[in-house]
Amino acid sequence: MIILVLLVVLLFGAKRLPDAARSIGKSMKIFKAETKDLAGDKNASHEDAEPVETKQIPATPAPAATTDQQVADLQRQLDELKKQQAADQPQKNAS
Image 1 (cartoon, rainbow, N blue to C red):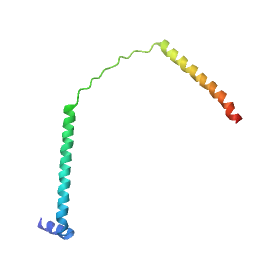
Image 2: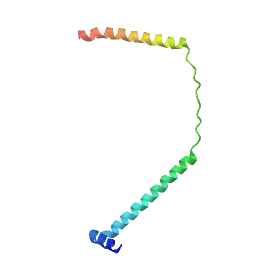
Image 3: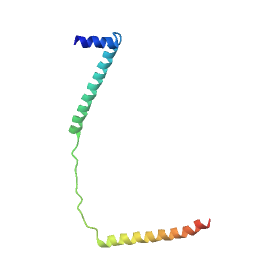
């Protein structure tokens, strides 16, 4: 251990060691505080959590008439869009 201490003193110098030790001490203090906060947050979040109610929506098949009506409406809208696109296309070619 003494050899390691002497080696560190020779490498870093006697003037820089107190500053280095102070910086390491501050870093360790911050690290410990953050780990305590993190552990506290995990415990608090589990204790404060309210139970979540889940409800299942019963699966009801859509009536065939409604589905057919939706398909017919969509087909009509598609036809109208095609007519509008066809009417706009000659105007773009003319200019």
